[in-house]
Image 1 (cartoon, one colour):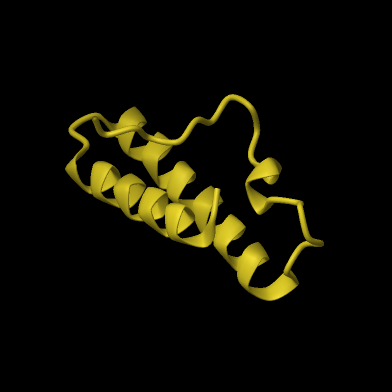
Image 2: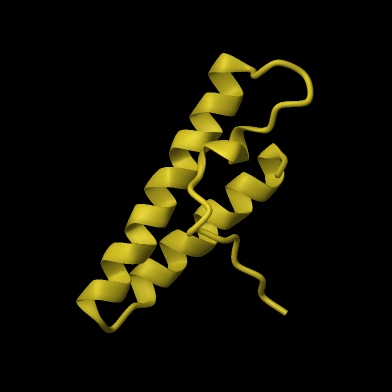
Length: 68
């Protein structure tokens, strides 16, 4: 996942948290936004070695949103 994808997923998570009508859904989307923000910071400041994606820091339980 490149930096543009991370920014996109972050914004989608924030919008979904804002629109959530259920407290649990709001919390989940806020947590996702927080995790994407951490990945963005990691990518911008730590610059992983070539071939290593910062998205690997996310747990396998969290999947990117596919708005089809």
